[in-house]
Length: 227
View 1 (cartoon, rainbow, N blue to C red):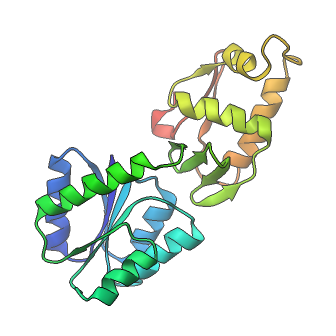
View 2: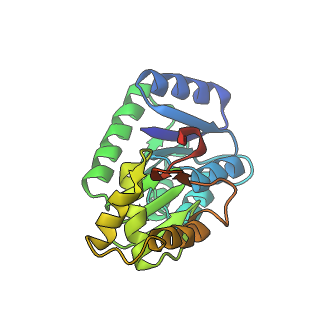
């Protein structure tokens, strides 16, 4: 599980980071609002722990932008020293999943993280993720770095197969069988569809995800996982 902590207090940040890493989580950190928003919008996380009072932009603004602009459904737990009912309601109204008041016990934060993740997984849409690429197989919504992508129907099928097998290689023959059965149009059809998919998924972005394994097939993976 990958968690983002956005917290400007260095002592709280260090304590939460150490504790969650000991619990086995993969943790990234940001100490200001803009840095936190950038990481949250461009990297895949299973949960965000978000302080309200931050330099740059506050946690409420970050939460609202992630929900309304980036349309991310990642669970968010907000941290704050403000314990009024209006503050808690405001945080929940703009899309937070839980609200923890400072000071707090690390064990309580961990318990809340587990509870929120259980709820998210229990009612979560069927979503595939590779790097910053997300594919909701219920709505057929595809996004990369929070940006919506328009993928043609056959491209969606290719994308689902590659994402399900990521970071493994999918053999060319396997893809052709999945797409067309025994009636593959011609030897260049798959290559053409892969090219179209690459134009949408990779070309507008800095890092390629769709890789050709020459003589074998294709894989969808971040560069560090690619052959």
